[in-house]
Amino acid sequence: MSEPLLAFDEGATAKLNEMREAGRFDGSALRVSVEEEGASFHYRIEVVERDSRAEADALAECDGIPVYIDPASWPNLAGATLQYVDSLSGGGFRFENPNKPRLLSDPLAARVQAILDEEINPGVAAHGGRIALMNVEDGRVFVKFGGGCQGCGQADVTLKEGVVATLTRQIPEIREVVDATDHSSGENPYY
Image 1 (cartoon, rainbow, N blue to C red):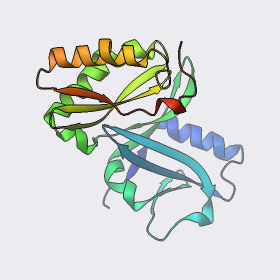
Image 2: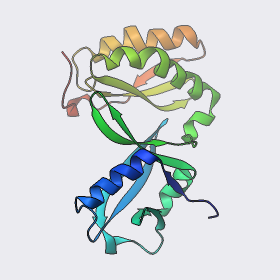
Image 3: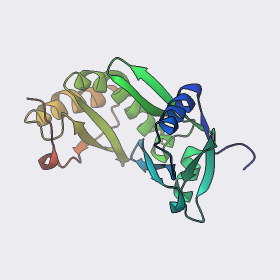
Image 4: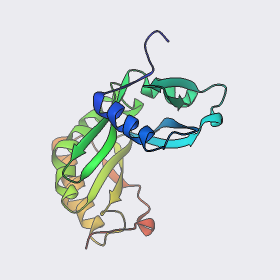
């Protein structure tokens, strides 16, 4: 690897140094991984024992703090930057990632995701929810409800009157929208 697999912005570097000064990295390292689920990446950052590095793990460093990255995550993290961002609801790490999930290479999936991002998810976010694109196959769109929408008694209404109506109006080649959510496992539905 000629350039680092993962870069760190000033905010992430400062926060990690703050954690080190508080003793969080005494004998420890950071492990970063990413999994692809539908049209989304799900990132995981955890403090691990320094001796937990597997032989195949890549090693990145942030001001001397070791960061382990498993081989399955390499393709989806190449060129990404770990950032630390302060917001009204608190601060947190996030990734600026030039890579995209494979599903978004499908033009229909990319159009569906754009509508979810721009029109549907801002409305359901007001209720603490989100809708994720899981797959597109033969004119069928598979979505998954999360947050306040998972397990909500109004999820069926949101699906039919919001998601299905909006997607099929704007993308006529969609034959069906399928809810692939396990609503019985919702923890914090909005009522």
